[in-house]
Image 1 (tube, rainbow, N blue to C red):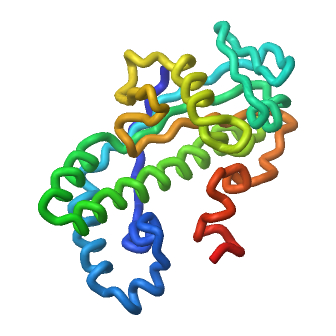
Image 2 (image 1 turned 90 degrees about the vertical axis):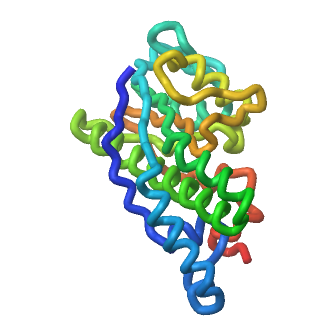
Image 3 (image 1 turned 90 degrees about the horizontal axis):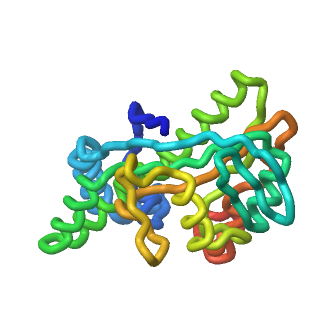
Length: 228
């Protein structure tokens, strides 16, 4: 199973403030202390990030009844998977994480300084979001070398593919002995700052739609245009 571990995660203080659910411009104007804490957390947190991506590429051998049958005997199923990957010739199944060191440091710091500990945790959230975007860009470039297109990124927990259903399918397709990510019975991964994902490859694929369109939180998300 290929492993990618050369990622330069260029995150900023504004990325950390967004990961905490805030508007960077408003926070800079009204809460300068939060900005100072974020600057300190970024300086300490960056060396504690250890981004790595594990993935496998599967041929799609057959599509039937909302199921994709993959090379090696694996399969993917679910309405969302069917809608976006039914025309794919191949599927990338991937797990990404920034590791445990920052997570452990943030948890420890919360005991003595809750604000700083939470801000360190937000560094991890911003980092894994950036890693996910970089993974998409990596496989988009990879696909273009083969004159292929990529689908929208699909994550377990999106509308049409429940967290438990999606996580179980992804972990069944990747060799757990080779990866530093474990799936808990709840469907949550450890380390917590991890992502699981599917990306379809094909000659006639469309990346129409945005992952946010299929998020269960879309009506309440403050980062979504039109939401207050």
